[in-house]
Length: 176
Image 1 (cartoon, one colour):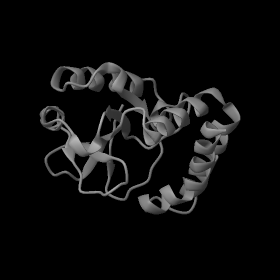
Image 2 (cartoon, rainbow, N blue to C red):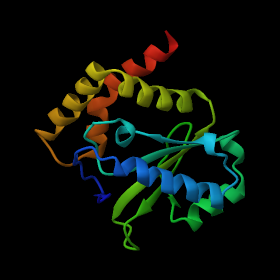
Image 3 (tube, rainbow, N blue to C red):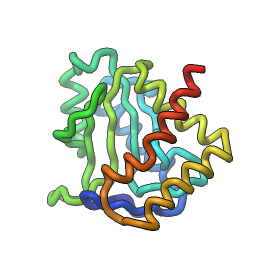
């Protein structure tokens, strides 16, 4: 299994169970190097959806009580295991990434630090679980991603925008 995408690259690879194994390794590292409990670290994103093609980057949600008051032990623990805080501004989350090497050109993992059991946490977990339990929705989502790649292999913002309506529709199902 090779993880990693260069800046602005969009590429999908076939599903592999190695993604789950890699998540479990990282989760153990997080448990050893931070005060986060296991139930506050979840595998999310397309690599957590069985059978789905995905960008070869592992997404992890890590939940804290208050995003405005993050324990320094968490921040330094992430750094110890190779995760660096990104400068991206996203509402309700702090994003960290791990890279293939010290050139920092190719990301392999993301940690999305969010408020535990807050709206974003619940949406991310619901999305993963909904697609894992709904073959029709899983196929629609994969087709949507493949449709984008017919026209481009770059433009991560455009790729995300291309999927946004579908993702928001799934989030709405959580509140129904």
